[in-house]
Length: 120
Image 1 (cartoon, rainbow, N blue to C red):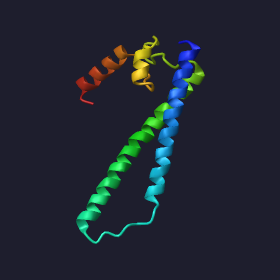
Image 2: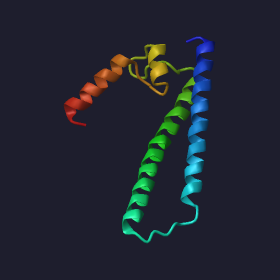
Image 3: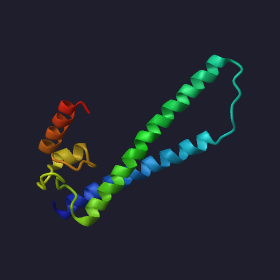
Image 4: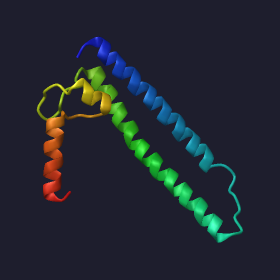
């Protein structure tokens, strides 16, 4: 992969990482704000459901943050865009669709088929 393409992915991943970290900070600030009092149990339940939903989203984003950091490490180590299974190059189109991927489309398809067959 040429240096220009690597820099494109480095910038894209760094920008995405910064966005996710900013959102995480705002969630923490919102969770530590003054507690609201809800006289109606239905209002309280709705508020708790919304809060749980936000926490699930942030958990998914936390996992994505880890993957982005790993992708940035792969760029630094010179192995970004190389399939960890077959060691062939991952297409730029796949990397644009899923920049944190570690497998080419063929290896990922086989892995998903194995998982499905094993019921995982």
